[in-house]
Length: 260
Figure 1 (cartoon, rainbow, N blue to C red):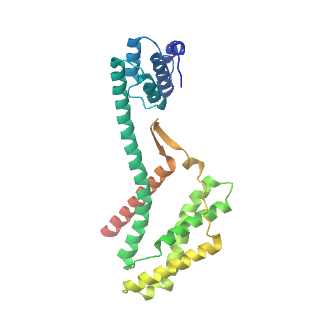
Figure 2 (figure 1 turned 30 degrees about the horizontal axis):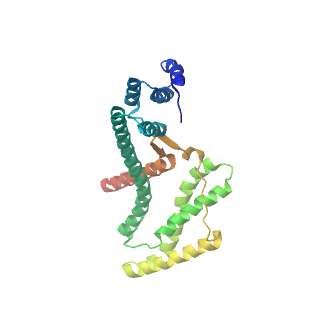
Figure 3 (figure 1 turned 90 degrees about the vertical axis):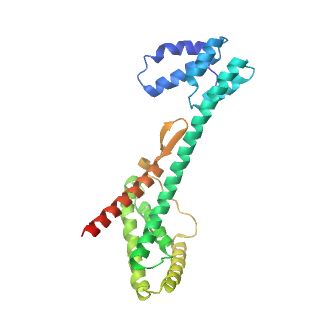
């Protein structure tokens, strides 16, 4: 956390020669932090101006330490820099919160689409809809058990298989129960609620009531680091992208049906 002026002087000569922008930015921060440790007031003020919008945690910590015992002029410059940093941190925190909300909302939207289609086409309030999603999740789990050494490929196999298995269970529910209850919404609600309980107990019997984890493939792991204060996890980005893809496919299907 400490940067001495001597190291800053040595590093200053290599900044212009550095071709990588991110490395160059870090070097400039290190030099500025070294300048903060000098006794010269002008050098300190110039260094504060250089890093007043930096989001690196060490910059904020260094400014807070420097403020202790600083004179009025230096303290004012530090307060201005900290205010600018805090403002940017607040903005990126809001962006991150919105991103998390969109990713969670995408999962709920996918579930809601299924409920809306079922009710809109069949007039049935399917209380077992969540269990059909659960079956798709356990299908993914089983696929990974069958392909333990190919996790990256297993997810590509599991996505269509989850749709197929859940669809087959849905067809079985429709043929075995719901088709006899059309036009009776209360009865379909009660019947599908009972089916949901049966499916839950069946999963507990087969897989046990303990949580089963699905391993994230390497290409879905990690995060996209935009800056020191904002990084977007890749798995959440894929969720949002998948939701948009489903929306696009539904739009094309509805458009083709309408034109047809």
